[in-house]
Image 1 (cartoon, helix red, strand yellow):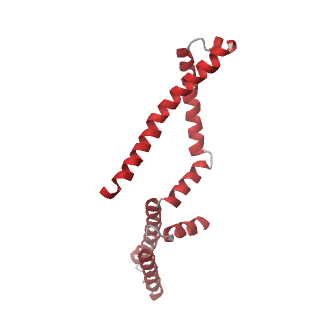
Image 2 (cartoon, helix red, strand yellow):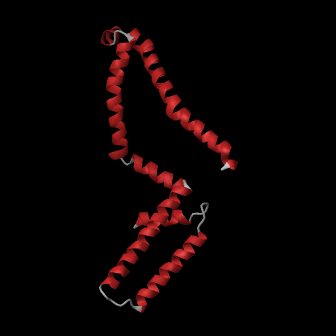
Image 3 (cartoon, helix red, strand yellow):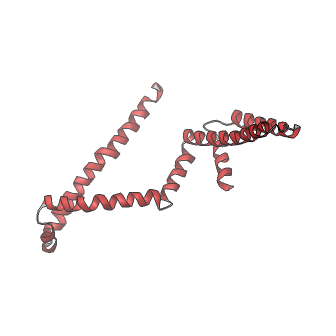
Length: 164
């Protein structure tokens, strides 16, 4: 962790800047500029927004619900967020590894449940079943030995899931 202290600090600085400072600064700047450069120069708009505080109250009162709705639509009703999440998994090897591991765990658990159910019904596990278990184990061992955070094994695995 110490070797990444500079990059980690840079990341935290950017998050603090863009999420908090720049957001508040941009909102104050936009409200100020639009009022004093646009509204004050147009009598019709000056009648609707007679003072700066009234302008802020009206814009915030309308803006927060509208922007909340836009955010909701972005996450829940458009393919935009799914595309962003896909890019995040494609580019972040740690997130990709967690996803692939959960998929592998799910596949193993499904096979184990099948075997447990068969054993609970006093069914005999055939040599074919045992051969398939060894094949799965060998496949998993090979996959986990070959993959690294920097190669494309996990990404290729994800793409195969996406295609099916």
